Length: 246
Image 1: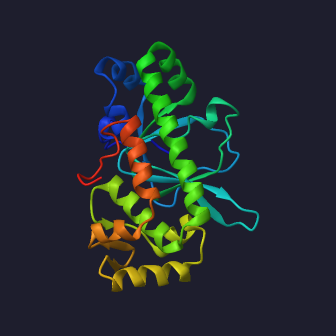
Image 2 (image 1 turned 135 degrees about the vertical axis):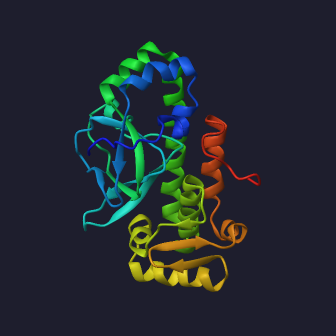
Image 3 (image 1 turned 120 degrees about the vertical axis):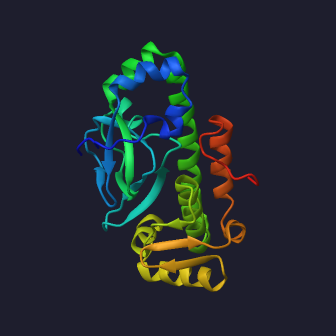
């Protein structure tokens, strides 16, 4: 994954932006910016982890791989956080498959270097621990969501969480992407999104889903959407970018 020459600032990532200037100054010399193309495999399950990534405008999903080759979402990463550190602290092997769902850029740093920076900068280490707790809350809530909530509610949650990370209503989401994340057939997603469009909540285009009625979409979503947002806001205020009505 080559460095990106036309780099956006590292602090487009809200976790990096939350660092005090002196702490960020320790970290910055070790960061580089890379492109994350849509559909790109960042890490596969069991792969050795070398880098921690801090997305700017990209969205990366972590999915578990089932015996039949299917996938189910475990966590989602965007500008509010990072990925590639937690599992690297133990076995250095990826928990699952990290795939870029929305193309963009990210800052990355060698895991060993980030650990060294954490030792030198206690406040940086504390921020990473806070994110890890928020990530655990997200992952556990997602597991519960996948087990008990309808495809319709989970689809609404996924659309909304994508919207929160890209700051625009027109989302580069395909039925294939949603089907992979929800662990269902593409035909199921097509039926669900058709119903959401007929209800006036979204508008579908080629490779794009546009939110027309966010409030209505939130009502159709399960409780997990707001719970995950609130966990981030409690542990990492200002990083998730909550709507005023959250």
